[in-house]
Image (cartoon, rainbow over all chains, first blue to last red):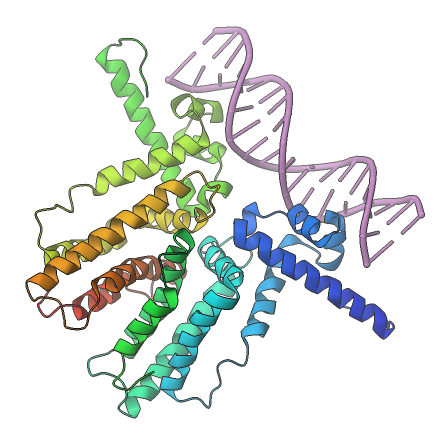
Length: 202
Length: 202
DNA sequence: GTCTATATACTGATAGAC
DNA sequence: GTCTATCAGTATATAGAC
């Protein structure tokens, strides 16, 4: 990505388009096989390139998987805003689970696989997931605390514990869904638990 | 394992002891690296054998990982009995989470990693986990239904959904714990959710 | 920007000596 | 029961032609 010399606009666009093709193929590969088992050759074949061709755009496999996750985050961006009330933030989380299941199951699948794989400290995206869990759990806790301040949290609910539980539920339901895509309705179960935390309708 | 000729008792014991050594080493390797990235050479080194030596006792890597899971199940056996009441069954599940975290975190770690890895249908223990989720969710649901029959389930709790949620929580909390072993108390969060399902103390 | 060819490193599994 | 030696397969990454 780090351009070293000026180029015509057309060349950038062409390169960017190719990078998007590779990222799309990488999601397919990593979602099915994870990082270690998913191969660059497999990504290359789906893109219509050679393996060396892929490495022209992403200098290593590790850089590719990191780019995929960053790209995913950019796509999900804008769904959560600081201006939202606590209840609205949790509703946005429920909506995210629903839309993941319906519109981009493959992306969610990749996320589920990589988040377990990357628990190993040597994994190339270990740091990414470490920070991501800190961030998302903290945001969920703050949303629950805001809800508590306006009396919308059910009495006895501990915001910190409920925040960890909400995120854990997202991950755990995803795994069960991967084993039985017909028999598990992630979004419904997640919504049911989230609703149980509040005194108002989500 | 399949003995073809009679042997002295001592030889069996020696072989069985060696197999246990290998299984213990395999848990270490698979818990840290998963199935695909964990290598037989690594297992062999920890056992003090050569890679070929390991394959004398387990004819393939797939057979080894299957044996590890079976071995784990035998260890956990006896914790759940059909005679238990619904509430007692759920309490046994909470106790299992507590003892996993305290006594055998490595075993739990391996389970968490493999259960995600094996969502891929080609994975050698895919069938094992498919059947395991069916079994464990069904048992949890039946326990909740028994509790409902004696009026111990909180009104409005759906046994099927709560059963999926309980098991999902076990898996999801485990992942968060692997990223932050100091900041997450799996057992406490799990207990808190489980307690919220009942009108009596767990 | 993409290719072919290749260097280098591991992998699981087998053959056969001891 | 354990070893050494080896095979065949696959992987990432690089070098250099076009």
